[in-house]
Image 1: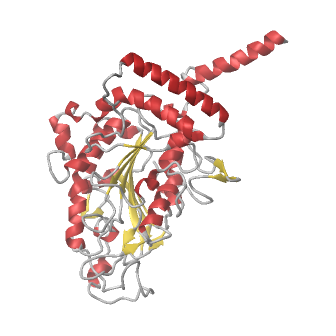
Image 2: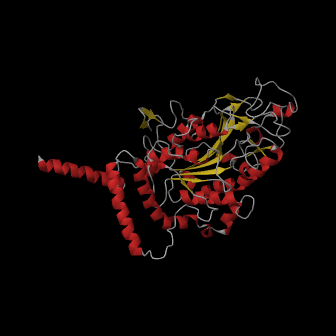
Image 3: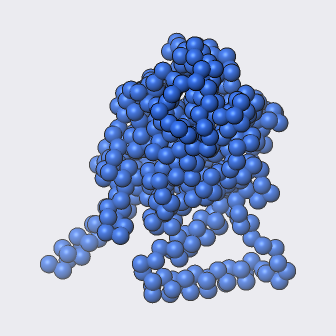
Length: 462
């Protein structure tokens, strides 16, 4: 009995080791596309978040009625928008043109992305529950209007784990000019174990990864540093044993261990001199206007090909000037911010395709809400959670598909309204996750990214 029991425990341990190393044919690993609940089509995700509210009727949502009713005062049933009194209906000041075999309408602010429309799937009736930046950003990232909930990247880290020991699982690359609304709250792990927080990389900063390099202090030798780290590890283990319910220390220990590995792996991942001149030009690194965001996009590609699972890139900072938050002068403000991202995003899609990375990588382009069809002031547009546009590209996506539609003014979703929970459920589905089963017990509630909502949008899936 003792022999069989001991052997049984040994077999369990051996099976775990075999499964970890992918040696069991019937034990698929999530990181090898086995999926958590069903076979996955996606291994890695790049999310492009246009912070501030990208105007749908000036980019992808063509509405002839705005052309016909331009300058008229239309009663939309509201006395006030988020920050203004409704003005006259305003047509898009930009030229519209159909592109590709799908005939997708795109304005002149996105000439490069327009060339890629046949590889994209559009969600034309995305909705938000709020017209306020802070809660809307939380909602689109975490599924909740309030702070304190885990974002999608943290949920993926928790549910699927890491694909590499050399780089973080979840990376955020902010706009080179600063953090978005809510600052780092948009990419928090919330109540999940702290190890699932995002690692923030700022490629334009003197130190792209904070505190990555060890300090240079006279008197510290490799031997003394090793001895100090050993003592610190021992003290940490003792503290951890006395506080088993607190994940912060274990997360910090894991972060320090990862940081040590990053000292060799991160410089290589961030070194763009290894890219050809043709690749750098494809992204737009040679253009002073698009160069900073192009650098971020190229680094995102280098990270996902090194098995970082989720990379989130942000365009736009806090404020209504030179951002997507076009309250005062959309004629000049939108081309400025769109010009920063158009060539880099198109280059990213082409590069991923040419390298075969789109076969298991999902790209998401989205915002926290859209803009109003009437004017704010002379040529601005106010916030609008009633409808906006998101598009998907890559693994598992039906290229050229379109789902949902807004009303004749692009004021509200009219057909197949799509809340963020449906988007999240669809992304999780592509990653092999049933969104109703990815849960974490918190304060007596089984929490999930999609709360009590969410339906997979099969119409845009291949």
